[in-house]
Length: 142
Image 1 (cartoon, helix red, strand yellow):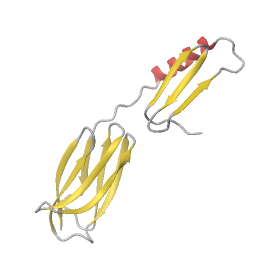
Image 2: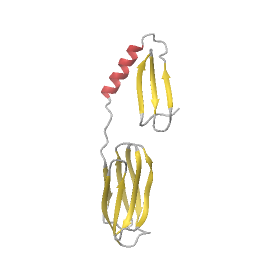
Image 3: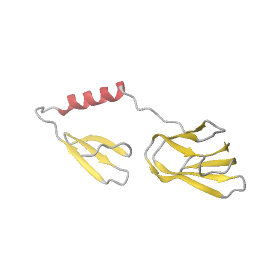
Image 4: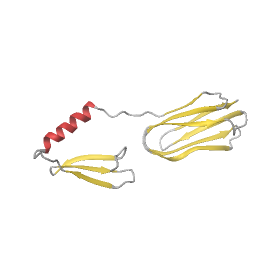
């Protein structure tokens, strides 16, 4: 059984709870209460649980520490909604040096490590791009 992380909908109809799992999973589930003839109590319990445990809304963020760096630096980024995320490193002339990531990611907080062993000393630009957010940060390798 898989657990929906994003792209899911929950509904109540016909004495059943229906779950539609999106995000390319195309799954449709129905849940029938066991041992209770009145599903209204269960729906009330679910509603109270949702209200007491609100969903955290993520805000976009991109950070590199340390910067300037020698050896290793950590790229931390927050993907607010599931999207294809592209993070690329360019040199000062605009030439692509490295693709850090170029993949579909679920909403969440991620980190990547970048090593200066394969980089010449100098100024670089790290560019983040998803469906909604774009940001460029100047990075210095010593």
